[in-house]
Structure formats: structure tokens, C-alpha cells
Image (cartoon, rainbow, N blue to C red; front, side):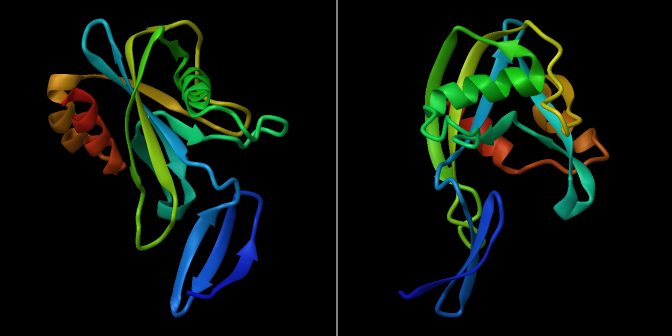
Length: 168
């Protein structure tokens, strides 16, 4: 199908293929998401403001791979380790790749590479980089659904699939 670029920003491009309009990452790299679990079987989640929904949202720690000038070819696992520490202050020596899936196939060609970080330990404050205002939540894995349902905030539905896949 013939594609046309309608607009390009720093991180996103809006494309048109026939009648279909969709968004692509300018890096053409997957997003990394981390299912981080500590020794007490608590899941580490983040909360941050998301302008498209005008609300804070509960999510897995996650971020772009290859978005740092000079590190465009950053390995996905290295990006996951960097994002976990930047956003949460947690680190781990036990990592494994879980899966890869599409974020929202009707809207974007973006994929998410999911990693599991086991026995994470908090080694710094976290909270994100300049311009990010991230709140960290430590939630018992067994209570995840109840905790999410008790929150007044929306949550990213991908976190449920990623946690399920990591625990399977």
C-alpha cells in the first residue's frame, strides 16, 4: 500500500496508507516495558501525567529505546535497565526477555518489548529525568487487580498482559 508522511515531530510521525492514518515512532525502535518484582513479591509501578488523557496514569516502568543522541542503537535490554533505574530508582542483576507485542495496532505500528527484572532493589530515588514527575508504587503482586480497581486513576491496560506473560 502506498504510504504518505503527513507530519513529523521529534518522536512521532503521522502516516497515511490509503484511507488509514496512523502514528510511527521516529526511532523505528520498540518501546521497552519492565515487569519489576522485588524479593517480597511486590510489583513496582509508576504513575505519571499523560496529556492525551489529561490525567495521571498507572503504568509499568517503560520508555523509548534509542532516543538518546549518540545511543540510537542502544540494546533493548540496556534501555530497559536504564529506564527502570531512571523512573523508579530500582535495579536488578536478574533480567529476562518476556515477550514483544503491538501497543495499539489500529493507531500505531509501535511495539513493546517486555522484560522481567527479578529481585529488584531500590538503589536511588528514581522519579524520572528532567521534565518527568514520576510517582513510584510498590504493590503486592497478589493484590494487583484489587489495587488497580481501588485507584481513582486510569491504568495502562498493557500492564496486565505484561504481568500475566511474565508470571506465566
